[in-house]
Amino acid sequence: MQRELQNIVILTGAGVSAESGVATFRGPDGLWEGHRVEDVATPEAFARDPDLVQNFYDERRAKLKTVNPNAAHLALAKLDEQWPSDLLLVTQNVDDLHDRAGSKSLVHMHGELNSAWCLACDGRFPFNGTMASGPTCPQCDTPGQLRPDIVWFGEMPYEMERIELALSQCDLFVSIGTSGAVYPAAGFVQTARHYGAQTLEMNLDPSEGSFHFHESRMGKAGDLVPEWVKEILRDV
Ligand code: APR
Image (tube, rainbow, N blue to C red; front, side):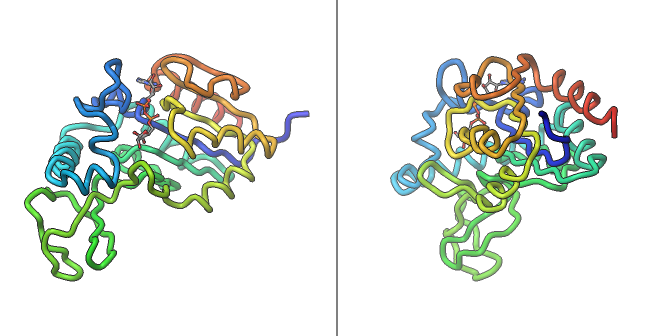
């Protein structure tokens, strides 16, 4: 028997921001804005060529000022506001479009473009400038020690305990716009199922773990997500 729908965990990936004009990570050419992910998204890449990595993220950060939340972000924010039980939105995206749409119960598990991490004092703080010029840390005054507060390959995603707890208590797990290529996020569907949740995927094409989901809806997030939100808010 299907249990009553109360707690929801939603995972989003680059596909949810694609219609806002933010490039996905794994384009048809396998490159992220012309770069191999390993060349810009690993601690080794940063140690080898910090200027390349800083310039890359400076460009992505500047681009945020030119894009806006789309219908999918807005629908998820509406759900966050109106859903009567627990809801946690976990995003792999480092853009700020869920925040700007108004989602409050939100975890940026892979960090944020608009956050800086000072390697001198270990402080993290909001940042929307450029790092390539080696700015000074506002907390410890050390110059040239800021790095993007982004979880690179080989680093530990943020707030995993909170996410695992929510997955173990959710009745519905929904995955939107992610290729399912990167763990631990790619394994969330199995964790949620293990604890008895229903699972739904919405993506442009089947993700790598598509067969794990009870239901898959294929199409654009900007169409599918508002329809689904309307559907589940109907009985609230
Ligand atoms: N609507 C829904 N899905 C879409 C849309 C759209 N408009 N456009 C693209 N997609 C789908 C693609 O078909 C693809 O399956 O979104 C998915 C995006 O996959 P990726 O580019 O691999 O992005 P993501 O899954 O978020 O990547 C995970 O990998 O590089 C790391 O840390 C980085 O967070 C990132 C992680």
